[in-house]
Length: 251
Ligand code: PEP
Image 1 (cartoon, rainbow, N blue to C red):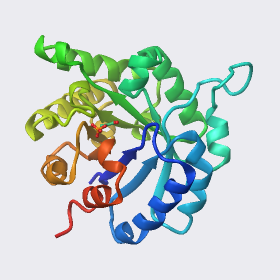
Image 2 (cartoon, rainbow, N blue to C red; image 1 turned 135 degrees about the horizontal axis):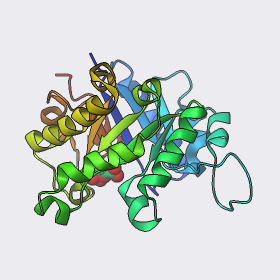
Image 3 (tube, rainbow, N blue to C red; image 1 turned 90 degrees about the horizontal axis):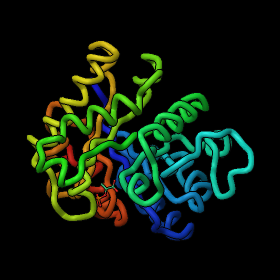
């Protein structure tokens, strides 16, 4: 049985004092959950957040990483740098990075390999645009993104990779894919992994849904057969809404 994972993506929001306050307030509200709780924070919040989550069940991730170990790459941060301060997770290939910062399937693959080599737990994002969806290209686009992201990985590395299916038209727009649609796309991704790496691997890989997840739709989405939790943007910026999403399975 796959664990449910709820990962917040703060994007370019939250100063260190706000991050500490958020974590302090969130801690007692999620302490009893069996779900994995992750906050992916800006680089400048990492160190403070990592100190604030000590002795809690909250895990911290970064939102990007470069694939080189060191060198003349002004402004970049390596997997080793993230790991040495105990960062656990890292988002790779978010659609905003693909759209604004020229991230490609090839750089996603390089970043994924470099992160796994360093023992980070990657969350790789894939998803189709509205035009691709309307042209009935969703399956082709997302399975191709997954195949290219996972190229040349071992079975073990694939098992250690979380995938987030995030239809681009649903990110930050308030539009959510229906739970059936989201589940269907995630099944297509799982089938692709089965074709490439076998059933045992595909059944272990955690695949999240992202795109306007909120307290009102979390339970329905996360109760679907293939949706293992969510990558949450806007609703992860308020303790109240994020806590409700984490505790979607409590009554
Ligand atoms: C995201 O940033 O990955 C995301 C899904 O954002 P939102 O929840 O705001 O749509």
